[in-house]
Image (cartoon, rainbow, N blue to C red; front, side, top):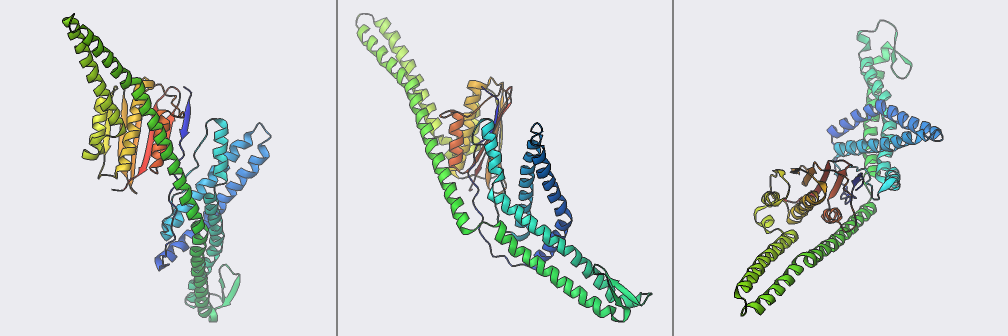
Length: 431
């Protein structure tokens, strides 16, 4: 087995819907504060991005050093897009899905380059970056307006403390006679405040237009999600059917054939050699019980009845008790999830433990299951084996990936050569 860290393609998050949210005074004040902060921080961040891009392109011919800087540029763009999406969603409560990094869908260096390229051309990321750029420009306008607003308030009280015949309005270079200071100060403060509020309202409109997907984009994303889940379900069913056929053909079927042959021999000897016939009948009885046990295990692999009756915690406890290697189980669930989510996570854990027992040479496994905020059922299985696990078509990890994908979840496998191997799954859970 080769060392490979692989992130399975995840079912895309459900697109956000546009919500009609009134711009309350609190939101306007929050927008003004954030724009002012972006007016200070934004130019620094965009300067860093421009530096990474320019120096990276310039150093590409120098032993490819520039490629590292360009990679940093791509993921700095992603970080900016993620922060901007979270900022806009937190400010306006739009229900936006979090920006996710692109996953590697193919092995090897070519698959890694393809992942980076898809990250670079991610339209959601670029919409968020555009929103950050526009917000930074608006912030650069807001800063001097806030200075004028504060100076206008001070100017309104200038006759009380002025020691000269004129007072300067900060940010404009205009000297105002003390006699007119109160009027000009109040007027400047009102105009500056009105301009700042107007920019905050404009920011709210632009953020919705740029960051929130259009209806067409939402429908396209929904269609892509449905296609991915349907493909995963079809692939998972094919892998499961192949596994059942293999287990029946390689396990139960030969045993039943052997039982039939043993009974035939016993029938031939029952008159001439009753003792030998009795031994053959005992052998057939033992083989029949073993076949029944295999059939039960096969049926349990298709569906665990205890999962429906007593829930995921009890089903995993039974699974850990049957494991060939010691399993430390840590399950903390506040409530039951829907049947599909529990079945998908149970199957993933069961198949991972089976793979660990067969291939990892592990001395123990640790299984952690949690119900996270936002209605997600999360599980992690880690063993202390030799590592090097990878997804192969028709294999156990392939079945896990497709079954979780069909349930709308995500899978992450990390298995460097030498171990340890860890598998994380997250599945949307409706209680």
